[in-house]
Structures are given as C-alpha cells and as structure tokens.
Image (cartoon, rainbow, N blue to C red; front, top):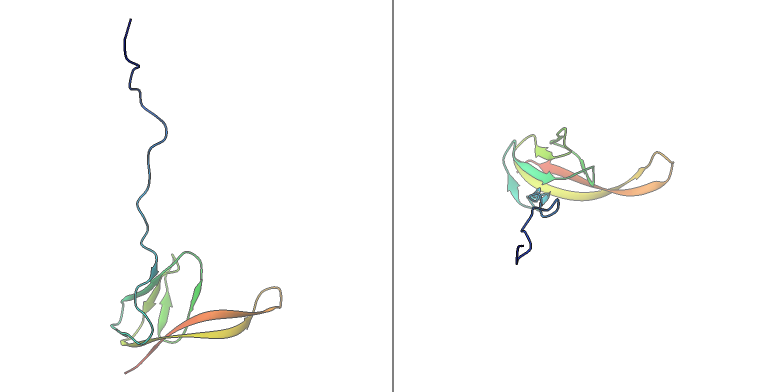
Length: 92
C-alpha cells in the first residue's frame, strides 16, 4: 500500500499569454506609414483620416505624420447620439 497519494495530472493549470492590446502611439507623437497605432478587439477607437482598420480591428497609419485623438458625436444604429473616439494622422 502506498504511503503517498499519487501526483496525478489535472485538467486545470493552463493559461494563455496576454494579447498585448491597447494604444501603442499616443496623441501628438510622430508615426511612420504602416505603423500600428492601436491594437483592439472591436472598435473602441474608430479610424479617421489617414488611418486603416485591419481585419482584427487594429488601426494602422496610412501615411507618416502626427497622431491626433478626437471625439465625435455619431448616431448609433438605434438612432441615439453617442460620443465616439476618432484617431487621425495629420501630416507634419
């Protein structure tokens, strides 16, 4: 008879790596064309001038310039006014 309990495996104990989401370049900082500005899930920030939204909702700079964040009141699909965060790249 064993004197110690067997150290079996468990179904728990695994964890995934972080996805490193968030703002990569802040307001007023210079950026090159093609650089990532924001990694996000869903459209918390919306693309503005000189910004491209990728399939996974990542926002990229289309041209070089300076990053500018702003808010804009837009109507949602229900007809209500909502304040949306817009990201733009302004030429130097």
